[in-house]
Image (cartoon, rainbow, N blue to C red):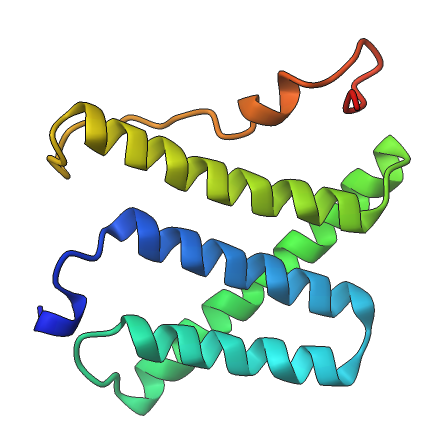
Length: 144
């Protein structure tokens, strides 16, 4: 690993990628060509910033397509969930972004509790969605 990436945690990289995927989903739902172009550039820029060594052209294409496919899946699922719950797609995507950030915070807490040992808690998954469910009323909607 290069010095540039020294100290970066996989959880932080995963959170960045998760937010890129949510951004791609938001761009897809917007239907705005400029937003889609910006999102695709954001995917490329984020990946370029995370890698230690240059990817081959094929590897780069695969990684970009994976991120784009993740955005497509997120867009489809958020649209379906919005239709089922009567909420807006924007609300659903905002909740997805909050879950990504919440998961990163849980990883930060876990590291702090275990003296920044990155292996501590390895294999355990936190329920990031739980932070949203805690604030729901009886009909499943967020309480204000």
